[in-house]
Image (cartoon, rainbow over all chains, first blue to last red; front, side, top):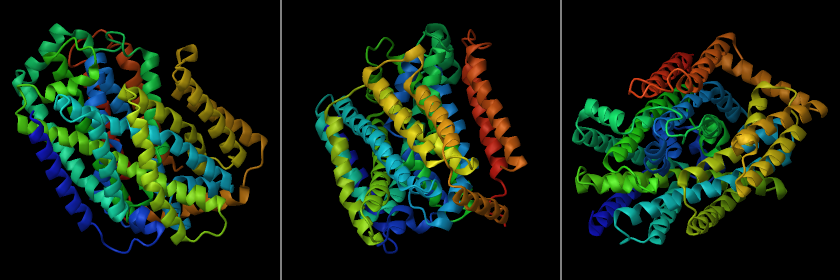
Amino acid sequence: MTTSLVWWAISIYVLLALVIAFLSRTGKQHNMESYFLGDRKMGGFVSALSYSATTYSAFMLVGLAGLTYSGGVGALGFELIYLMGVSLVAFFGPRFWVVGKKYGYVTPSEMLGDRYDNKYVAIVVAVTNCLFLIPYSAVQLSGVGYLLQGVTNNAIPYTTGVLIATLLAIVFTYIAGIRSVAWTDSLQALFMIVSSTVVVLILVNGLGGFTTFFETIETTQPELLTVPGNGFFSFLTFLGLTIPWFFFSLSNPQVSQRLYMPASLKSLKNMLMGFLVFGFIYTFVAIIWGYSAAIMFPNLENADLATPLVLSSELVPPVLGVIVMVGIMAAAISTIDSILLTLSSLFAKDVYGNIKKNTSDRLQLRVGKIVIPIIALLAYLFAEMQLNLIAVLSVASSAGLIVVVPAIIGTFFWKRGSAAGVLSSVLVAGIIVILLEFFQVKPFGLASGLWGIGISTILFIGVSLLTKAPEAKANEFLTYIRQALKKES
Amino acid sequence: MKTNELTWALLILVIVLLAFILPYTVLANVTKWYGSFLLWIALALITIIMNYFLTKNWGKK
């Protein structure tokens, strides 16, 4: 793959995305609800594609394909169990949506703060989210850096790739807030899925068609078709990976915030169903991709190299290879810009808005816009530190975000939940996850995410039972949901 | 949670449990495409279909 071809492809992609971003500038983005939620008027189709582009990042064709390469079919199980976990949206989605409209919530942490009647809940949850999501964005940025470096044989250095990704994420966010993010996301989602599906079909065909493809794996590397297989996916490792991701749709604010945006319950339904179909196809493609790499290049030392090697292989025509490369880049950037936008809304609404008294909506929006490049810069610096092993770090952040899950479930299903319960569960479990990740220890063989969810659940229930719950608020909140849902369906 | 919702939630839970248990037990030695590979794909498809039925009537009123 020549460097000039790569530059051409990146330029065309950037140009197209910029046109779409400028076209998306409808309405006035003068208030928080408009800038961060698109006035709660998003259609189902754009919501579905944008949700997909935000969820699926460079991790899929690089990290997940790499996991398939080194560990086999367990990677498929891991990713599909995540997809099954998105069913949580079918239960929580309408609830988020109705209370979002009723109480005007812009962020999930704002909702928690209001529901548990304590502003520190909003602040702590928002700060925890930032703490774990900035490394996650950094991982995405480095994904782009490694990719460009890999496919061009170091002609485009790592730092250049990271810088391009950072700048694009800032620009896509700045042009029209969530509108430009959602529309560029949609373009990128289509790009990601079409290009990668075409290449996978070519790969399978080039490797003898589906029957021969699997026969080759069955005879040469049969351990890639079972778990624990070669031992990579021991049951505890599998559990440690899957449990945090199972709750991803609730724990990650850049996707749970999406539940406030659809114009109607019908749009919300289309978002969910559209995403599930997209996710199913994209997962399948990423797994077959990893298997192709295993057939073509067995015995690589670094599994993260599998994807760049497949892209530059003889089976893939260079133009198509470069298109998929841009698709992977787009996957990363569409994830980062959504995270940037969400984190800036968390900071402006929940941290700034709660700490500084009497702030206007307009002022919060201004703060949010100032924070966007600052968060991007932090992620950039994190990426420059060149932490490798994309999958491990990605999972570490989902392990950290999982500590908020008991509080979110309690918001809708447990009247006795109290602010003290939320604060203790998020803070204590969050700190424990950070310590376990920092020292890379797994007590009793259990990964940090399992400790995170376990400890936060026990603390949330235990401390809530010992303290006073905001009964009046809980009753009003839950009664409203019941009535609103009855009216809607 | 409505009873209808609860039924679906339990059904999905069963599917997810199967997705954890079967590949590590009965399919642990089936080194064929129709082992864990097919099972996970089938279970994911079933879950998607369940989501379809679960959300079918949203926004109909």
